[in-house]
Length: 157
Image (cartoon, rainbow, N blue to C red; front, side, top):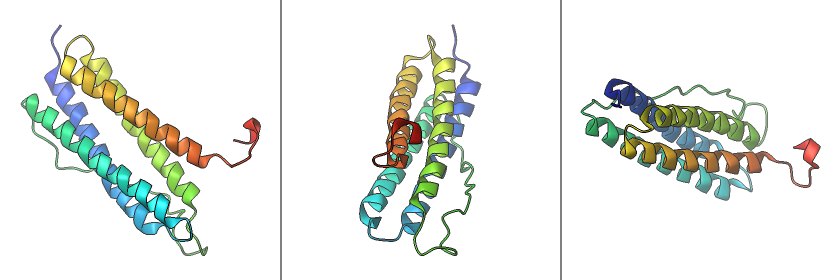
């Protein structure tokens, strides 16, 4: 049972690109938040950007472990621009969080693909994928919780 190194390198580069896009995305979002609740939201967004950079570095290290070449690309930076400040006095943080959740879901998909590729073939890649899946699932859960309306009944969530 040999690991397909080319596929693993391609997936790791994809992960690295997604994580770097997350760094840019979360940094951008942190700059776009205004209002009374800005400080804790900006702190959380900046923390996500810092974690994304660590995740990207680790993916790059694993690319070189497999004798591959780390990508210089950055993943998609598409945004809805729903949070631009042209129509309202405050930034709709919910839009930022929904975009963040979509980004986390894309990253999770890549980590699951890596886990599937590595299972039974590379303990290092398996453990890396499992660890990052757990982290990304917790990030996605935190975002879902932030999107919940306080005092909403279960059907209103």
